[in-house]
Length: 358
Image (cartoon, rainbow, N blue to C red; front, side):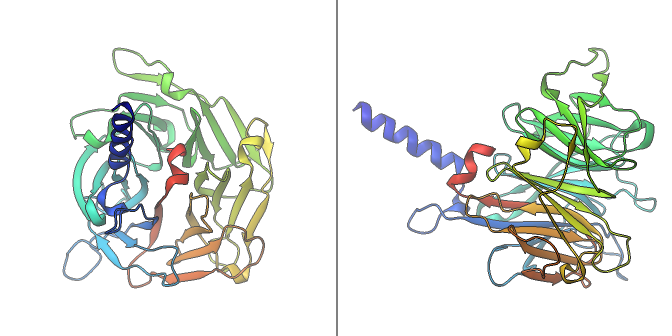
């Protein structure tokens, strides 16, 4: 009887860990490789109808690499985007340019078979230039990196699946005039890209347990340390594959010349992160790479994952092999000219090997 109960509990655990979309008719768990792409355009067509701001590659690791479905979230132009399987939701910030002012964060629920349904939102005057999103499962906390001059900061939203327009962030950490873009979270440490002089990575440790003023939930926050990246120039989105221990960062080129964009790859990143300066293990760049303005990256986090995905503002989504280095040709390229400007990537890549990292 005891063993029967244990077996039932294990079955129940896996049932809640994997939704119906993750199983085939025989009930076996199947791998997922679904790429969500955030587009920044809004109401640019002649009919005045909002453009689709989330498009999807449903089998991103297959030989057919194309946008095969779409969704319109409530964002008036998409910005950075995040997916986490334990949230079962996509978090998307707005583009919020001078024409469309929309300082909000939106939740889009991923339902059975991958259908997307618009959920909650949170509007805040502090979230005018969201440049990074990261999630900590244990505390159910969403970290929002906002780079807005003297109002820059890292804002912590608890229970992001239940955000509402009238609820302010649980913690509001103001960082001063830090020029930030991109973020990744691992082992109670938030990594944020440092733009400007001496580009690198801001390291914020133990941010979940940092105290704030009880009256207004605010506090000042400075990085624990800074990792300078040798030879870095203009850093943008980042991703951290904790299974294979690889950090990847997108770096703009000169903005116009094909091949000047770069993807910086740091193998065994955890072994580098305690220092003050780091160097890329490999760099994907050059004319063959087709990189000009790479703005975001995503890595297939499965132990068997083979690809890294790149959004380039020159209307491209590119797929490289994770082992690539130097002036290499992408494994696949999708031209987004007919769809808009890709500005953010979120990859849902799941199997048993990915469970420990979330």
